[in-house]
Length: 138
Image (cartoon, rainbow, N blue to C red):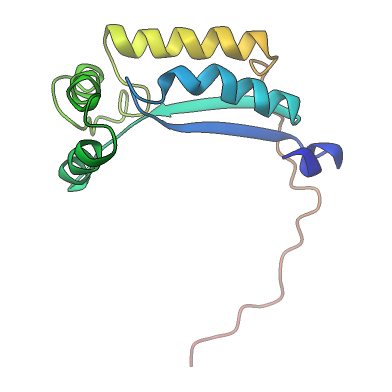
């Protein structure tokens, strides 16, 4: 990140997955470290557990964080409408409800504090060059 930023390449960071009740408290520290390393923008995504990931994650919690397991699972269900995953396009990347709002506020405050709440830099296609004719398959 520092090497890219020092080369004047705009750097952004995505804090993901944020595990409610397990890693969410680390978000401000991660954002601070990224800002110090030269990041100019940030985003976050709370934990999503699509398809068969929920049972694997529950097993992992039981082994690596048994004392927090029920708290974490409760918070994941809280931001996912009672389920372990929310496939709805409008809510799946941020979650819904009181705890999702808490995560959003924590992210917003830390982003402002460390200057990561600015608009993302625009992209340029000025250096793009169309490659030669694509080869055919046959």
